[in-house]
Amino acid sequence: MTDFVNRSEELDRLHGLFDSETADLAVVYGRRRLGKTRLVKKALAGRKNAVFYQARQKTRELQLKQFVEVAADTVPGIEDIRPGWERLFRYLADQNAIVVLDEFPYLIEQDESLPSVLQALFDHEFDESETTFVLVGSSISMMEEATLLGDSPLYGRTSLTLDIRELSFDAATEFFPDDATADEAVRTWSVFGGVPYYLEELDADRSLGENIQQTVLTRHGSLRNEPEYVL
Image 1 (tube, rainbow, N blue to C red):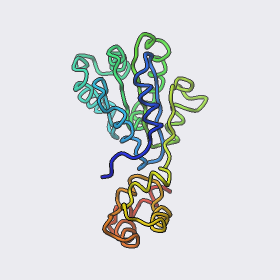
Image 2: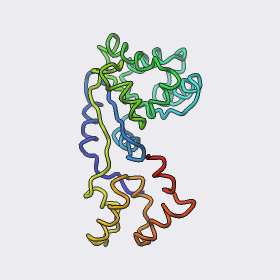
Image 3: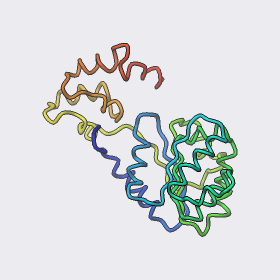
């Protein structure tokens, strides 16, 4: 796996938010495979007060249970709090924790009131806290509906919004072999673009044609169904 590439501006803005002395809300969104989760985890490196929870498509009760289990590694006292998003978030804010809710749309699917819960907490109860909540999601429509559009509960509450896009050509070339010619780099870019996940699938010991055959055209290629998923 290639070392973390680019995204320096996004990292700087997240670090600034984490160091803020006020309660802040960040929204990180964009299509799948662009490295949103990896970006946030990179920004959290060395932060001892961080709770990173990756949601799954499970019931609300299971999501709460697993959230508490994850958060307890950072804030053990949370296990004594009666499960409920409002109570749990309030407790973490009292500890000035950084709380990342990855795949936030999965949480909304099971509890549509969650954006309103966060709205009320930020509006009325986080005034003395230095907490940061980071909402991450790949379902762009759901993220916009819950956090960004004018009629969404969290509209106007975000301190930072990051719309993650593909890497630039210059950044993408860091995934290519050191001896790749300019022609080879352009040809590879024209097929795989700046999506980190796609670029990490490339085998430096294979030609571009062989990589296309191996990842896209073969029946069990890692990117075989990607066009259908994207469309």
